[in-house]
Image (cartoon, rainbow, N blue to C red; front, top):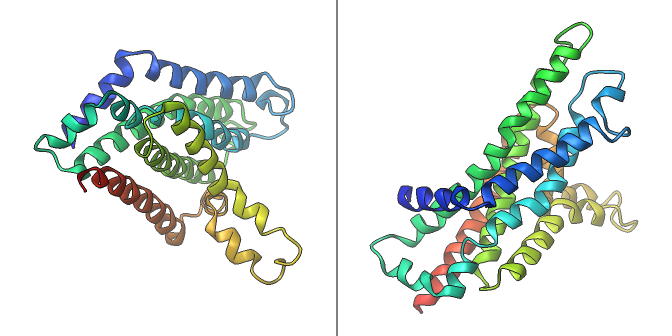
Length: 243
C-alpha cells in the first residue's frame, strides 16, 4: 500500500494536478471569504469562519471528483491496470494506496486555510474572541466529508475507463448523498413521519452535527461506515476483472 501511495502522490505533484487542485481550492475560498461582500469576513460584525465550512463542501463536490477521476479510469483506458493487478500486491492495498493518496492531496489543500483562522483570531475584538472548539469540530467534519467524497470518487473511477464519465458520476453521487436526503425529507407526506430518519441517511446531517463542535460517536461511525462501504464496492469492482 505504501508504494502505491507514494507513486500516486508523486504523480499528482509531478504534473500540474496537485498544484491546480490546491490553487483552485484556495483561490475560490479566498475570493469568497475576502472579496464577495455577502460572505466577506471584513463585512461581518463578529468573528466566524462559517463561510469557509459552508462553501468548502460545495467546492469539494467538484474538486474531489476531479482529483479521483484518473485513479482507476486512466489505468483502465491504457490497460496498465492489468499489469498492476498481476503484481504481488493485494487488491486491497491498491485501493487503499490510491484512496489515501487522493485524500492526502485534499487534506494538504486544507492546511493553508489555517491562515484564515489566524486572521479571524487576530482581528477579533477582543483578540481571540473566537469559538475555537466549534472550528476544530468543523475542520474534523470537513476532513471526514472529504474522506467520504474521495471514497465515492475512487469508486466512480473504478467502474469506467473514461475520466469525464468518472467525474460526472462522482459529482452526481456526492451531490446526492450530501443534499438529496435533506431535500427528500421536506416532502409534505414525510414531515412528522420519516423525515428525521431520512435526514440522518444523508451526509449533510452528520456534517452539520459535528460542525457544532461536539464530536458524537454516531457521526464518526456514520462517516467510517460510508467510507468502508464505497471502498468495499471499489474493491469488488477491481476484483470482478478476475472472474
